[in-house]
Image (cartoon, rainbow, N blue to C red; front, side, top):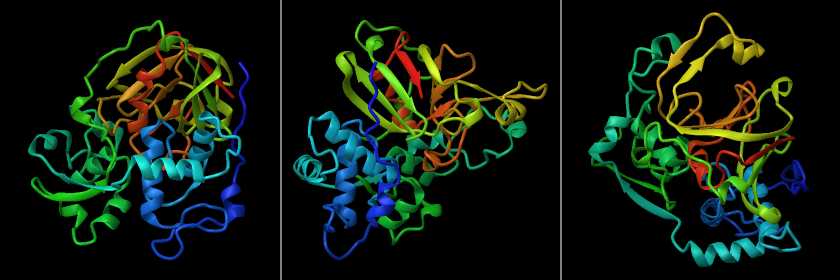
Length: 325
């Protein structure tokens, strides 16, 4: 399969793009500068499976790449022209903000007492969220910093049941709808799709037959010495897996004698889903730290934000080719 690199790395730095809350809505390059327009664009891209990273109303590396990938996928020759996607976003996403009321049933997914050390985490039934604000941030594909910016009159660390907060107007990632230990079988349509892991651009691209460009998500690839470059295939996909925490394996790629079997949950090192490939011990999975996607490195696996990882079974299934480059 031919794989085209669509992105010019670090072009944002040469453009000098910075998000502003005031001033002109576009700069000379056509890139918007105000928070509302950028958030509108990010919501649109996220809905169409071209992940801009966390929704934060600011143009960063992954928002830029998402625009380029969306333009390419929809057949626009000038893939660096923002006007196509801005016009589509304005039409489809007229409202950028929503209000979310914190419900009592969500508290079962929160445990402020969850420790940081693996040897202590094994004593808990789940790797739950540590706070309400952490749950709300991941639920709406953003981070705690942007939530605080949207809610300047509220103390995020003091949120409680019944409080309402302003959030990005996105179809939420709902932890309560993730079916524990659900596995996904091969599918006559989805198993024909291919996922390409571009470790240089830190993007996972999904293709359908005939090289139809279906989706692209930001990722954190493994450490360079552990990246399993080559052609593989999806073997298993499983919700809410447990995780064998082995510090020696994570740091040196060699199984150690001391390891801890961590319980499942959104704060598991592998997040809420595991997609194992034919390279032993390597998988595509979620993460406990979505705000670090693209920056920090895992051992040999590929990390997605949980809100992107949960979409993988709708795009690929066991038997799908996996190309790591």
